[in-house]
Image 1 (cartoon, one colour):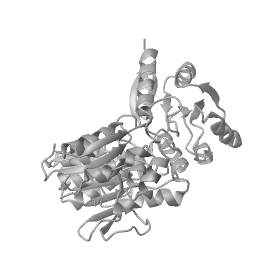
Image 2 (spheres, one colour):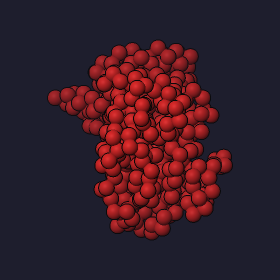
Image 3 (cartoon, one colour):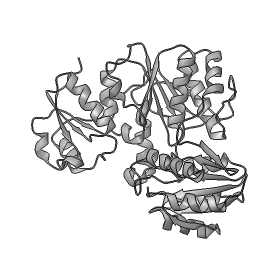
Image 4 (cartoon, helix red, strand yellow):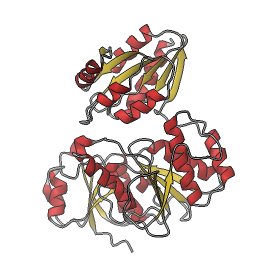
Length: 403
């Protein structure tokens, strides 16, 4: 039914790659695993006799092995494409620069409040292929979709597709904003007239034939969301529009909005130590997300910035740092570029080197009533495996402050 080949290459053997390999092997496909840690990621001989290459999101489409596969006419799918072909379940696809995880998890909570079966998968947490064989066919899947995952989708057709927002991000990989936008808009491309495309009010036309539904952060909601911040009200408006599109009643939406506590590493309260609040916003891996994190705090803030670079300008972030920011602490490889942007705006800062140094310096200077906010505006790969590990280390450091 799916027309799977006898032999497939799975490139990238982290979470999504392992799930893809297992799903293929369950169907009798011989899988060749390729990964940098195995040292075979540049060996084109692995393509011999191969009928498919499944690419993990961390693998750029321009790497030589992927380019060689395309040159041989071997289909290249993302792990999400494979999962969407294997799973018969209806999908809600959630993409955008920021807010994807929060919106996807909130939608999962709305489905649960309505007593309707649903699983949340995709970019963070459970890989889509990991749900293979685990769900009743009538259950919905709420799938968080990054631009990396959408690069190589071909037949993916979400019954409901959400674009939350679009701001410059991942330009180190996509090179231009147009290419980044193109990857995001692939979520709509295969939608038909019976589907729903949910976009910010006034957003440009999107591909596909779905019914267009617009949302805005000021839209009336059946209840105000528990999670704070104007950006989270936008997320709630998008989730509400999606829930209404699949026929979920207002009372269930209201129950979820008023009880959903948010997600880890996104404006996550960690502790109060000697009257100082510590907030983990490690998931703010671009400047737009960090600006949202700052906007959610009107009181005095000590801000920890920095990490690995993504070729994103820092001037908009520097301009958003207001008088309530009592101190800025720079970490990681982005420190020099951040310092240049802050210097141009006359914003004082301290170079702390690493997260431990920044937490220590901020804690020493902070006064009761202030908030120490980790909202880095950068990826984590210079010093951490991922943003989750960075957030976990922030929690550990704060816990140690309390003795």
